[in-house]
Length: 66
Image (tube, rainbow, N blue to C red):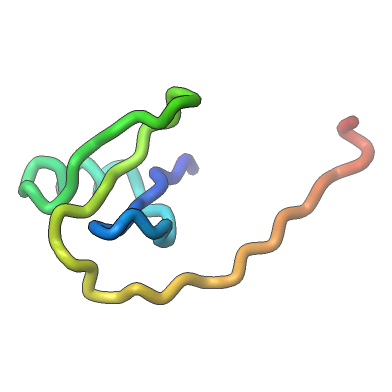
């Protein structure tokens, strides 16, 4: 499942969200959809987020696929 990156009102990265939630935020005026320099779509919140906590994220690389 694809996730949409989320940026706070201040420009700090937050946890990604589902595409359906991102569309709802844009429709309700809670966020603005933007593209970064690499062409990746993300949403920037226009209101203060209710929770600014982020979870630790670990990345794993499968050496067999390289």
